[in-house]
Length: 288
Image (cartoon, rainbow, N blue to C red; front, side, top):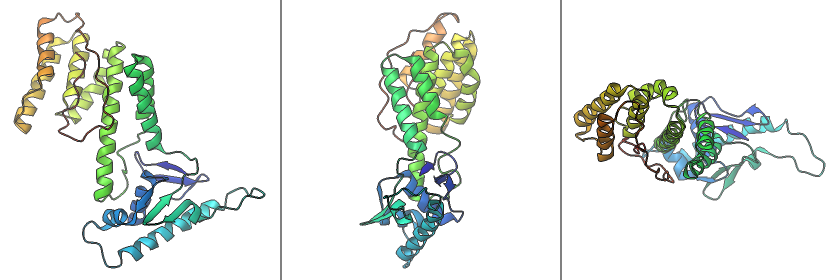
């Protein structure tokens, strides 16, 4: 089975879509697809579907949604090419009932989340090794798997909302490091348009603003780089009651005293976190 959740939900068996159109079965499939090849507890699925006030018929209704998914899977399995001596798969072999929950078997199929994590991890390791071209390439490939917000067309409950936030933090971490790699490769001018959009969208993300300041400074636009700092400071003070971090203030001072054509010194990057934490959105600082 091939699974996509980084954007529009999609699940295909033998190339045939098994994605239901009804909202609740889509929620069930999204939970199972995200945790493919792992047992998803019945309690977690019920919480996702109904929150803290499930109906008395919750388990029976969940079983109905599972049966609907199996009907779609069964129709797709009809395209299986028979192999002599090998039993034909059934829908129950793909969507398995396990003690306490359900398990969606990919059978060696693809998962965009797993591929994103694999490529992002390779990109982080390349950054640590100083292979900035390799890091930029792998992280760009990882980010290219995203076609929109995670579960973009799924009605999300508590469980999926939490997972969507986690995935978004992972995406931001990969984006941060890809931009860092591009800066290390001298691609500051190519980054200006992208960073203009990103800093408008993530108005309190310090590292994106620091990267924008560096890109502007290296493009000979020092006054605009300082303007980015002052806009960020105003937003942080007004919205969060915070001053910019000490590292961002040092970056501002470095730009103030340097000539536009002077490259700022760069520190060795800290290793990216194993799992990007949810937080204030201030982000990791760019290397200055």
